[in-house]
Amino acid sequence: MELSFYKVYSFSAKESLAIFTFSGCRLLVRQVSSSDEDTSGRNYVQKSVTSMSEVLSVSEYLELLRLKAGKTGSKGPVVLVTGSQSSGKNTLCRTLLNYACRL
Image (cartoon, helix red, strand yellow):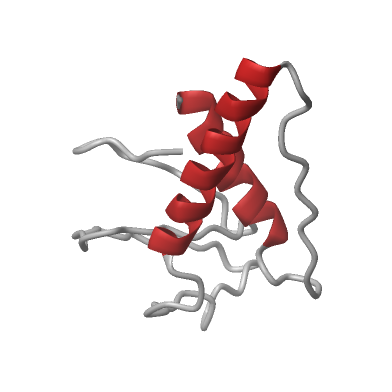
């Protein structure tokens, strides 16, 4: 999902999420934790493992394949995403799906 300017977003301490940016951003993060939830050490900034520009390139290529399939009446692209546990497969798929739906 794309974040909106000046909107407050709330997430549970049990949720795991990532925020990606192409050109940088400023975030105000307020962490409120109850005594039964230990959230220490869970927040971090990672410069780049998977470049979002690479994900965007894959999305654009898949869209080209979908358009070509639509013109020829053939089946569109099928993608298999593999990786180890917690490597970002679901995040990648959600991101690609989000881009495809917006197109």
